[in-house]
Length: 475
Ligand SMILES: *[C@@H]1O[C@H](CO)[C@@H](O)[C@H](O)[C@H]1NC(C)=O
Ligand SMILES: *[C@@H]1O[C@H](CO)[C@@H](O)[C@H](O)[C@H]1NC(C)=O
Ligand SMILES: *[C@@H]1O[C@H](CO)[C@@H](O)[C@H](O)[C@H]1NC(C)=O
Ligand SMILES: *[C@@H]1O[C@H](CO)[C@@H](O)[C@H](O)[C@H]1NC(C)=O
Ligand SMILES: *[C@@H]1O[C@H](CO)[C@@H](O)[C@H](O)[C@H]1NC(C)=O
Ligand SMILES: *[C@@H]1O[C@H](CO)[C@@H](O)[C@H](O)[C@H]1NC(C)=O
Ligand SMILES: *[C@@H]1O[C@H](CO)[C@@H](O)[C@H](O)[C@H]1NC(C)=O
Image 1 (cartoon, rainbow, N blue to C red):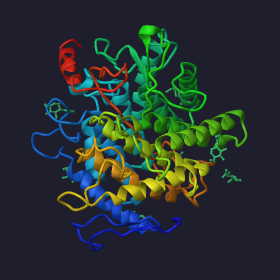
Image 2 (image 1 turned 45 degrees about the horizontal axis):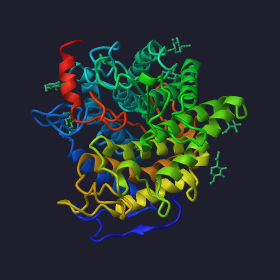
Image 3 (image 1 turned 120 degrees about the vertical axis):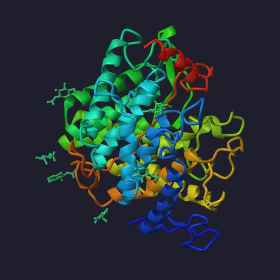
Image 4 (image 1 turned 90 degrees about the vertical axis):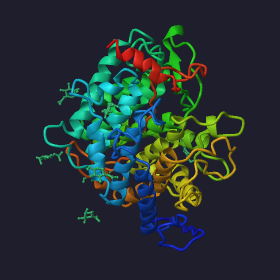
């Protein structure tokens, strides 16, 4: 079912364990084989099984290691997709173990393990919630006996975040604050990432349970984002607003994952609403949001000449290099776009829009996978002509992004011919029972502690953990 042949035959012989990645994008089995190699490389950078390391996290967060807590959720969301789209269950046990290890002490504190709570953002916690929701949708084996189900975990996170949302509505009329703990810098920001992750989780829960309470929340949060100017009438998606000036002026940085997470949110809503009624006002509204945001996301974040995903604010010439956090965004974005495409027919056209963007990006990414000791390490930049400020990036974010890229066409393929959106059945059925859904996508961004002095952008810098340490003593 893949369209158009484009063989990316590269340097070395096929089949060798240490040769450049080979992908024929027109062949499902070829893409699966490539995904298997990249998945192996992703899991090779996971340190959680090594002594002295932390189960569930790629490596210790700063200041000890490089990767913030939320990136663990990104890793497991990626591996859930890998299994879901390839049916290779090799990493399911370690995924279940990793997710379970970072869950909180109880359902009142879902995914709020004491180690990380002091520096936690709503977005950080929400990314773990999305991972749990995906585990439910894909039918990942249940957590060990005595632990709550994936669905109950996802519901619990949504529940605690609705309380935080309601508690802070006196500031700017809605939205989620970035930070959870008041003394952290960033508590005064209401950021799109936190709100988008919350809405993405709500839309998944609506799709999984058909409980209209979730749909009402997603509508309410979406309306707030547009009213406050974080999503404009051209469907540009901006970073954050500050409660200090009553959210008068949006920080207009555009990060790809915010757009991706909202697009996937809209796709879940559209799919679920249209399964109830093909031509209701709500179905039409969510359809417009889905297709408009899809168009804008592709035109803003994918290179005009090649149609390949770029993170413009830290990848284009003249921009500072991507931080460790920012380096994970492209993978989140691609997973979200794939998840949206699984749900919505209009997003699977191989020659236009999201469908085309996913294919072009998979192809371009695979071409970069010919480096390092293995001979198939991928690169961060996929266009081949971006500035080189990110040339040093390697390891976890680069391989995780690459796996998301390679899985994109498989996601589209998995849904094509299965009926598409509409009845919530076929390959993308999904229900509360943890079986057979086709979502994808999850996101992340986490951060903690402080902002980066970047005009109020809700992006963390290394200082976060120090602030967190201080706070740990207070709560
Ligand atoms: C909490 O931190 C300790 C000490 O670093 C570590 O051993 C443990 O695995 C961590 N737990 C979680 C859930 O991250
Ligand atoms: C998926 O993998 C399982 C084994 O893990 C196998 O029993 C099943 O037949 C596979 N399904 C498909 C559709 O290949
Ligand atoms: C990590 O440990 C788990 C549980 O013992 C095991 O299932 C998994 O295969 C291990 N993963 C790796 C990558 O070593
Ligand atoms: C729907 O979800 C809300 C929020 O979690 C819950 O309070 C309510 O009981 C649910 N309704 C049904 C019918 O399950
Ligand atoms: C999105 O783009 C497609 C093709 O470029 C176009 O046909 C469609 O009208 C656009 N949809 C919206 C809502 O802008
Ligand atoms: C939904 O299912 C019904 C009954 O099976 C069928 O008639 C209808 O065409 C389906 N709609 C979509 C959009 O697939
Ligand atoms: C969920 O699973 C239960 C028990 O297996 C079954 O009775 C129920 O019909 C399922 N619900 C859906 C929506 O598939």
